[in-house]
Amino acid sequence: MKKQAFLLIVWAALFSVLLAMPAGAEEWKDRWKFGTIAPDGIGWAKQIKNIVIPAVEEATQGTLEVKVYWGGVMGDDEDFVSKMRIGQLQGAGWSGQGVLIAVPEMEVVTLPFLFNNYDEVDYIKQEMSEEFDEIAKKNGYMCIAWIDEDICSIYSTKYDMSKLQDYKDAKILSWFGDVEERLYKSLGASPISVNMPEAPPALRQGVGDAITASAAWILGTQLYSSIKYVSPYKLRYAPAMIAVDWKTWSTMPEPYKDHYYKIRADVVKRFVAGVRSDNAKSLQAMKEYGLKEMPVSPEEMAAIRKNAVTIWQESLDSPDTGEILEELLEHLEDFRAK
Image (cartoon, rainbow, N blue to C red; front, side, top):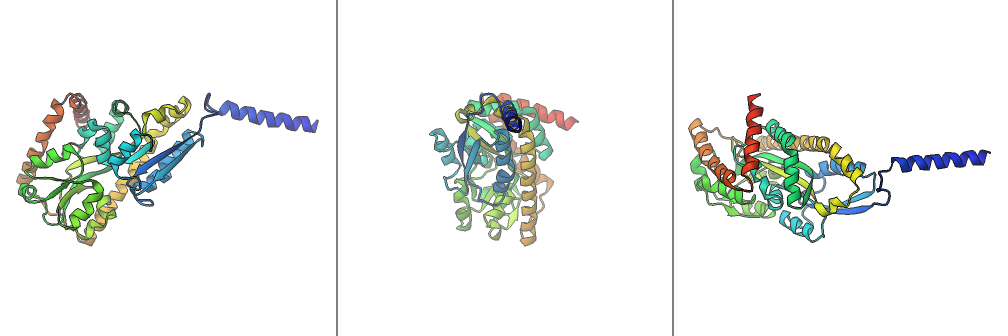
């Protein structure tokens, strides 16, 4: 009797496990390889390890193994996009450059002086997540998390960037794609195109003397010893994204997908809280080191803004971005009215 009772307990336990397992998921296992330029142990890498990977493991009940290649071992953002297309990578953690290569319509959130603060960024994420998910899907990707680089300032080794003339005089490095080059040209600059890994040596060697970037990136690349000035205004928001190839995502059992969608907002919230804290601490640390933020006159600020926002019109006129930008601006107007 004791043996029969024990067997009944064992079978009951096994039956309960099978009932708890999502239908059709019991045989599914996979291994995803991700690339990122983030160095292991700092910044984004901490959030990916401590927040994103555990969330994916929770959603898939441990049936998915995630291998991350840190610090540009698999190349840069452009390489990650190429390798995802041929199946060498299943996913990536993209900087703003990679986001705009993979999902070019995301340029609408990077327009100069679009967002005043992170409350506005978060509101747009909340109100338009479905639209941007569809845009990512159209381009062949599932957005695991729309995260941030920063609402970025411009840093310079030579000019304080408080005057419109500074843009005409500076040698500005541009790594962010077409929308950034249009911005700099609207301000009278002649941008020098680089990939992000090329930017630090280019600044140290004097090839360029200014760049728009996140505070954490400037600190992490140890450019604070070369950079002298930071602009007193935020020039533009830079998104980042953790994404997986849509074909790969499609192989995941539906219950696992549903579970992840339910927890994704919390994953993003916790991730960006860490990133934003890192940026604030990085900027403060560099100011204590000697980074200078010079005041800008109302007249110069008005001139810089007036020239910069002229590039909005091209995005509004584009069949690819016009409608999405119009909707975004309507949401921003509603939010600010509140």
